[in-house]
Amino acid sequence: MGKIIARGDGIVSGGALNVDYFATDVAMKLNPAADKIKIFLPVILELYAAHYRKRAGEGVITIKQAEDLIFQLEELKRRNPNSIIENKTNKMVDNKAYFERNGAVVDASDALLAFQVNDSFGCEDAIQKALNQGKNVYLEKYTIDD
Image 1 (cartoon, helix red, strand yellow):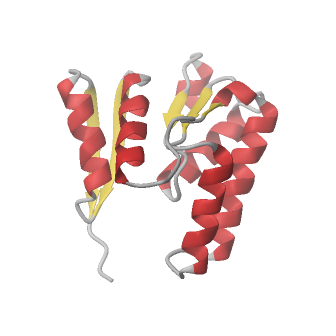
Image 2: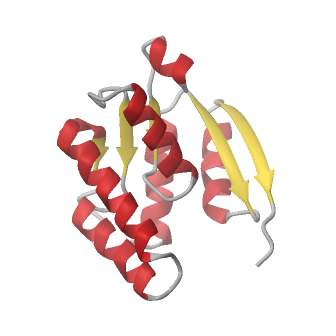
């Protein structure tokens, strides 16, 4: 990531947990002004935060995961309002919104670095969109047992 930022390029992400979160964290440390970071959200930030808090309430993720992600996205928006691209059309977080978000991420990217866990449909969607656009895809696949 350091080489990417150092040469004047940036990262594009979907603002999710795990890889997206960690990549954004590193990018924010390397690029405090956040002018080399673009995060595409499937809905506006307020709805996205509510969605993650709901998922935490359901026990799908921890409250800490939800709050850490929300804090990160809010801090990124505070540093550079142009770094967060909110989808103002979608009113709910669902597969349609996520797949649209994937398309926006791929459209804004030169290449895709994907970490696909348990044959994730969302990750597969992004991979196929990148391949259809003739973009390089660097894929790491993992299986995590429940």
